[in-house]
Amino acid sequence: MAFKGRDVISIRDFSKSEILQIISLAKELEKKPSPELMKGKIMASLFFEPSTRTRLSFSSAMERLGGKVLGFETKEFTSVSKGETLWDTIKMVSQYADVIVMRHSIEGAARLASEASSIPIINAGDGANQHPTQTILDMYTIEKELGKLEGLKIGFVGDLKYGRTVHSLCMAMSHFKPKMYFIAPEALKMPKPYLDDLSEKGIEYVEEADLMKFCGELDIMYMTRIQKERFPDPVEYNKLKGVYRIDKSITQKMKKGARILHPLPRIDEISIDVDDTENAAYFRQAANGVPVRQAILALVTGALK
Amino acid sequence: MKKEIIIPAIENGTVIDHIPSKVTFRVMRLLDPKEYTNTINVALNLESKKMGKKGLIKISGRMLTQDMVNKVALLAPSATVSIIKDYSVSKKVVVKVPEMIINLVKCTNPNCITNMEEVNTKFLTIKEIPLKLRCVYCEREISREDIQLK
Image (cartoon, rainbow over all chains, first blue to last red):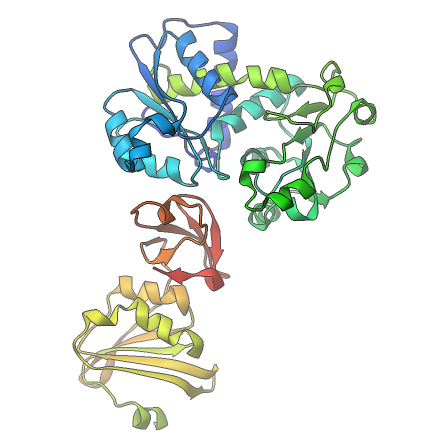
């Protein structure tokens, strides 16, 4: 499959075999570091919205492959604050680098950037829409922790309405015959189009508000933060924050070998005493961002085929 | 026949029939009437055996292209479109929703980039019945009831 020159905007754009190819390449890069692979190549890192893990893991991925990084981590000190359009910013930056990694608060910004750019765009999150590299690293983590992707029971917990990582992972895992459990309060339920999509593919799912009801059945519990920044109404946020909290007593009810994932940052939805249980996979998950992003950077720039 | 009395026959042009009455004016808007100089007849609430009430548009001197006909399908999939030459039907055109709808429909997501920057909207038709369109940019899915013309 040809990846060279391709944009990575939405998980929808990738087939099952392409996702598996990225995962397999990430495994190789993790086992065998390649510090010269991206020598002479530049990654532009354009973060119009704050990020810690994604921005740092992309930079780490690029630098560990011998490439260089330029860019900004807040739009305040750029021409965007003077009113420059996204289109013009991308047109300009695409002359300075070999690949652009961007995060933006507006949905669809990455797709528009890919139309303006002459070099590959990697979407590092566009509002509540997509975050495809997070999805692939989530899948990489599941595969590494459980040894397989097929036929798993996956529970998504928390903010399923605004959580882009949930939407993308749900779409991508639907290639692997899972059973899905959507555990959320009424106001943060999984949007209907995603559920319709699962029904069309014949994938079994349940919706539930009570975390305890199914926690003993799950292979993967994908926990999410209730995201303050996505709520138009702060009163609504205050009502819902802290609605789910995983502590040690819940992990004791989980199946042996089950794993808890979280795209991080966490606020209080996973208690610190869970961190040293065998179920806690979220810090390893964050570390997996580096090899997965290395694989994606190497593929789209043509450094690896 | 009664219909022909109410709305005069046209010599050459296009007749769009079987439009649900409530969307007739929206279909008219879609056809961008300010571009036309010839007579256009619009009728609402005509008796119809098939639909109860229906709308009808007759455009003199202008043959709608397949592209334009496809746009009509967005709002009125039940519509029938006939091209008229010398007062008789020379061709019936099949109404079909286009695969890609460019700059016709507004995205309903207020946080979509197409509502923030000067960008043509693009929607992909993912299902015709019931109609489901997906914004190429923000991936929001909309149904026929949500369609707002730009």
